[in-house]
Length: 250
Ligand code: NAP
Image: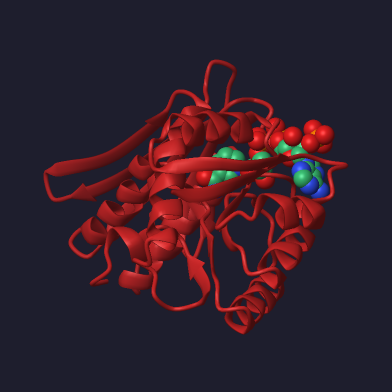
């Protein structure tokens, strides 16, 4: 049995992860932590193998320092870690011989969407990303849209774009990330949605992913927990995204 601690257990995603761990026959819930709890003391008493963190950008780095230094593997959904912090996490995890996965999106469909978009971009030069979220989302574009655009740009050096002088209302043609056009819609009635549109000669290819509730993250988080606990990830250190577990051959 793998012992799993959930940090941010009363949060919107954390609650779903707790229920997912409790329902899994091969996992044991080893501690639920929230703001105000003593993480170090809980690790000493509960002895988790893996800790899942869905907390806040202001909390996650310190939580990880506590976890990794005590030899606990990390699975991190919390956004907002700076690149310099990721480098420090990598060093700390290696020092303590544990793995720490940090993934921008644990929804398996979203991970597949990004992979398929990268593949399609090799064959279709014209591409635009349209993401849609609830009206309370703080950032635009979404982290997933940004990563999708970056990955498309990585496989396609030149992305054609219509002349911007056609834009008579500023912003009508969206923004760009690494030259890829990204449109962000914010509307009540939405959760998290993304379409990647590819245009070719006489054809259109659309790759679409829809999230309807926060349970969407549970299967991917459990894939990560099991992958790390069962040593699919053999190297200690930082693991960026679910991809190394889903596609170990690259
Ligand atoms: P949320 O509802 O605000 O939950 C955060 C929880 O963490 C709250 O219960 C909060 O407690 C707790 N917390 C805050 N500081 C803490 C600390 N120092 N130690 C332990 N617990 C602490 O947020 P959410 O919607 O669940 O999202 C959590 C994070 O995950 C966000 O950064 C979000 O962007 C990210 N996220 C990532 C993915 C992904 O797939 N990677 C998916 C969804 C969300 P209090 O309420 O007492 O402050």
